[in-house]
Amino acid sequence: MRIRLLACEVLFRELCQCAAQARSIVDLTFLRRGLHSNPDSLRAEIQRLVDETDEEQVEAIALGYGLCSNGLAGLRARGIPLVLPRAHDCITLLLGSREAYDALFAQRPGTYYYSGGWVERGADKVPRTAEDGAGLDAPFEELVAKYGLDNAQYLWELQSSWIERYTHATYIDTGVGDPTPTRAYTESVAREHGWAFENLPGELRIMQDLLDGEWDENRFLVVPPGHEIVPTVDQRVVAARPAC
Image (cartoon, rainbow, N blue to C red; front, side, top):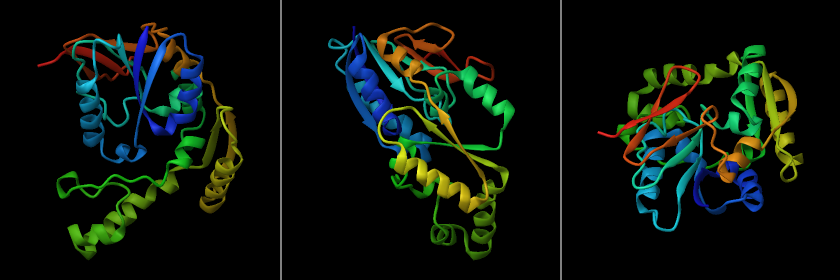
């Protein structure tokens, strides 16, 4: 089987290792981390790459993403299937299963997760238009320009309040690459915010199975040609329906 992988560069190291070991032939394409700050731009860029794929050369397009703030909602399969993990975000992929993530979240919901790729690519930003809104990571000056000083001060305090909702910074070590600098960065963030730090081993199984073509219905959604991805409110996370 030959697969085209479209994936977030946050997972670059892990997916490259999985591709090197895969039973399938894998053509790799990575997209910028900064697209996560604008789900509409993320969806449009992935759709563009899906549409330009030579469907005579590959049998499926694998997506190295979770639902990612609905960035994949509405994405359409053309002449070949799309395949994606049943995951809300890349934390599930880094931990190896939705069950592992759910258990950790139930145990301690106030945890902010980091990985080597997330830290390495953290400086990437995608420009936003006025129609896109300010964004959660907009600088104070941008908020002032769009909303005025008083409103900007209120929004700045609101978007900074997320820090107070967390108690832990957890570094997911997948065993790929040298974790020393990115783990040290995560520890420094924990100290800065007064959070506890934890180092947690990751698991590549779901990423490896994505590229090996092991697409069981419990962990993966296969979107048939002519269908689109829709989010669900149950454990499936995503489903497929005929595109309008």
